[in-house]
Image (cartoon, rainbow, N blue to C red; front, side):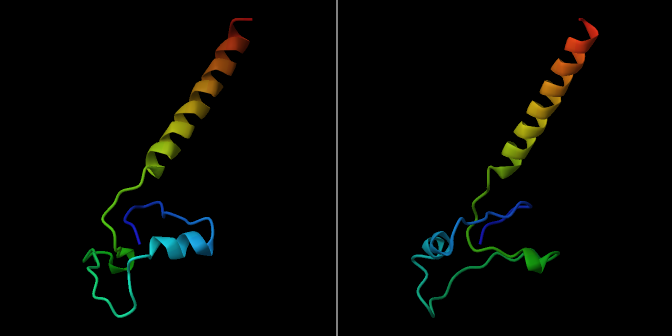
Length: 75
């Protein structure tokens, strides 16, 4: 439904169906299909913030590791 390397997942079937509200059966819609990767087609041209969350957790993990390492060195 949405573009991006990390798929936008829905918590329940109800949430997935709610994302499709407004799309009536038989209605013509615009699908965005990358010519190089047609399997990555999507309906809504909205980006996700998941990559930023993944990067944030990675940075947090590195900072905690660095803090622990420095704490061992200076004790």
